[in-house]
Image (cartoon, rainbow, N blue to C red; front, top):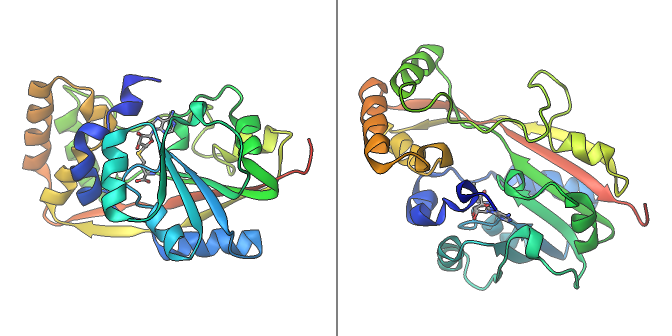
Amino acid sequence: MPDRALSFGSVAKAYERFRPGYPAELVDLVVAYAGRTPRTALEIGAGTGKATRLFARRGIAVTATDPDEAMLAELRGQVPGVRTVRAAFEDLIPGERYELVYAAAALHWTDPVDRWPRIAALLAPGGVFASVGGPIRLADPAVVQAVRAAREPFLASDELPSPDGTPAERAMQWPGTELQRSEWFTDVRQSVIARRLTVPAADYLGYLSTVSAYLELPAGQRRQVYDRIGRVLPDPVELAADLIVHLARRRAEP
Ligand SMILES: C[S@@+](CC[C@H](N)C(=O)[O-])C[C@H]1O[C@@H](n2cnc3c(N)ncnc32)[C@H](O)[C@@H]1O
């Protein structure tokens, strides 16, 4: 697993405080697609439980998995009573079959080799897979430019590229593209939940303190880049944070 994938635990408390949560609309979408509220779910890369709490509140028995103990410790504090398993996706042992398997801002960290047969092995036939993600971007083009200039000496980009190289203008984005190619899944759908957020500049900097691209920088450079960005940010900061949701159904047999 790349170091960057396990960079979050060192900032678990900041992650919980500064990363936006997910809207109830996300569960509504999944339940509508499934046709009924799933009774059981397994979450891949649950982190501090920002998505876990939504699904658990609907009465779904969630098993929250993550390889990072610091993230899981935060999750247990936030979502008491949820079953947690410390494991990377690649180390999950198929056994119990779930009605729903989902990942929020986490699937891109998993190993692409055998990703879909592994997920299929965790799902009951006809069970639903859901993945949600999407970049959190500055909404104002002038602020985008100013922050890019402030960041550039240290970091060309703070975003992750599409895992399978799907161009941004394609209608179907990753992981929908991979799901469409997988013999294990059918009825692949992509939906967008539009989100605009307004946050204090200090909270936006708090958010950046949890972004893996910055966490990889040496500590001195990290401080400098946050200082430089802090100087050009308006207060408050407008964010464009649309969520892209992919849904698919496991076939009985491929
Ligand atoms: C950006 S965080 C997302 C956390 C949470 N799902 C959320 O939406 O706030 C990514 C999470 O994926 C976890 N992760 C990294 N590599 C993983 C892997 N191979 N399998 C499962 N989870 C992984 C990290 O520990 C981290 O908690």
